[in-house]
Image (cartoon, rainbow, N blue to C red):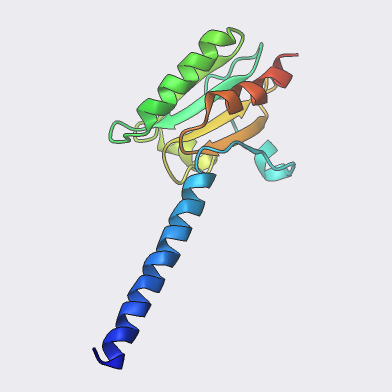
Length: 143
């Protein structure tokens, strides 16, 4: 084996290793709830047409017919809403309502938001959130 062939093998192994690490980091980040920024950009978003509950928190889930992981989000959110009946759930088809997706800067599916009773965005998750994470984010909003 000559040196150029060995170098090519080392480069391929290195690229695959870096790809694996980046993939793991992206996977670990998916579905994590992140608190909304405390800035004017988040507060100035018009949410009047989203169907948010005025009496308690609302989970807003952006979906599309072609989105496979969206069904998993629907199951998780339905389970959490069954356990916490004061929490409302609104599912918005991104293809049917692209204006709402643009206003909330939805760039990938599934994207899930938690709004408080006053209509302020409190949390956001891209990917499939865990039921325990949703519950722990919602319980302080119910108190």
